[in-house]
Image 1 (spheres, rainbow, N blue to C red):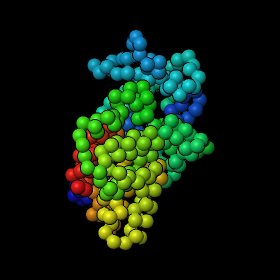
Image 2: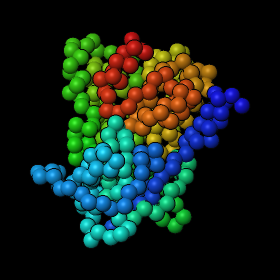
Image 3: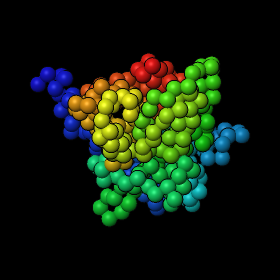
Image 4: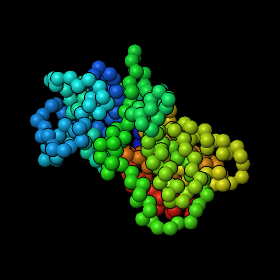
Length: 304
């Protein structure tokens, strides 16, 4: 089997499947995408920082790298129990940022099809202010998948998308070419749309996950004519309930009508492995959040 065929087979077996690390905080079950996890560490001495955000316990230095430790119980306003030998630090890497999160136990890793991950009801889970991006049933319990990007943006806004950067592009002509955005985070959806509007892209259609985006693309096909009159560009996150961005990209590339569309993967998970998966799926370009100005440049390149 050639390297290309092997990568395609690996993508076929992994596309639309989520690996989550299950952990608990104050007895409640939560999950994080394994792709965001660097390692698990037992508790170790932490140095408090003066005038730091109240949810930050302090900093520590594993392997000569200074890292911030965030107390998830404090952030989520859950009971903060006395530390025990089971407490764990989850070290993460996404959005080009390494941080650690203090949790109470780590349970196990689960491999779940994305179509078994439900989109949370925005009326129950707080919409843009909520933390849940997905709800997964594992055995006899529900696991809430947490929006860690939102946590970092709340604690340190400089780690998030800076919409004001768009203003540095200067005066731009209004553009009404339709752009389809697939993004599951209510907060990031709002921020991305605001940034595109500031860049004078006035016609933005938003879908909460890859499945909704695919159904919308199918509806555009039914209208007939040149598909690019209905959607000129697709921007997709990777991790989303129901259908992930790699599977969405695969479906677009396999469709005789839709395959002409540029697909930009815009995700916090653009590392070497994910970039290879995106290439095999057929992504036109891949970009790591929070590089919003670069995203606008790519849209300009592919649809102007």
